[in-house]
Image (cartoon, rainbow, N blue to C red; front, side):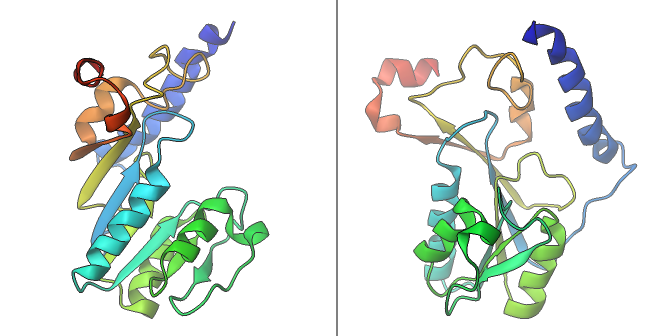
Length: 198
């Protein structure tokens, strides 16, 4: 039964991407280096941990960094979860992932909300961010990015390889071509032959 809904899901998800590809809508371009970390599947691939790692990496390299999170179960209007000096929001407003990042990244501002292009602008304006890390943004087209990273959990794989709601894929596998870098989490926990097959 769920298979009957797959074409509808495909049309809805791909039409949004098509608007930007054809130039009917233009993404916001920031005066900062924007890195998107995302995945193709539902469920945990470890992308939030990757976003945190990258934020620390750029900060250690001397860049002013900010992280913008989607804000699942949090305040959709947008808020500063951490200003880099302290945590300013409770989990009910920030969402789990944003609060986790704020706790893991002292000295790095973390913002959370649905309109990530507005929050990214705020990160540049208020915190002087030179690098903006977007957590869970592979499917977010309103903001132009300089680097797109797709994260995979090699233990979980791709399930049955089908689109939602019949499978775990949020987009068709061919959209992997939009990524600049593929990041394989837990690759050390699978045999090399299985990793190559993945």
